[in-house]
Image (cartoon, rainbow, N blue to C red; front, side, top):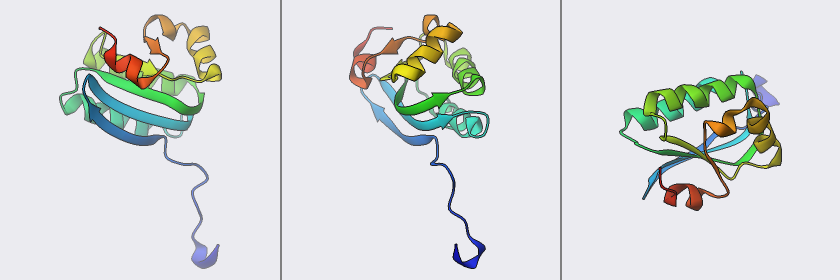
Length: 121
């Protein structure tokens, strides 16, 4: 690249945050791992500190999740409360990771963001 500038190798993990009826939707994407877990943590903390009682994490664009990123989700759940974090639209590989780790028993997983927003806590 010209001028010594390089393009980032990866897109940011937090693709957007939106307040909707039923909670705050945090849209994540790409690979969630040790290298960007802090960005995910910051987005979830901002939603919690902003008064969100329920956070729906849209995982439709997530390709990979490692143990560090899973830890961030559990950390956020402990801050907001047992029913405060729900996952939505996790793809096959992400669902498998949640099942293998046992987190699907602690973090509800819904087929879509709309399902997660309308689900009773």
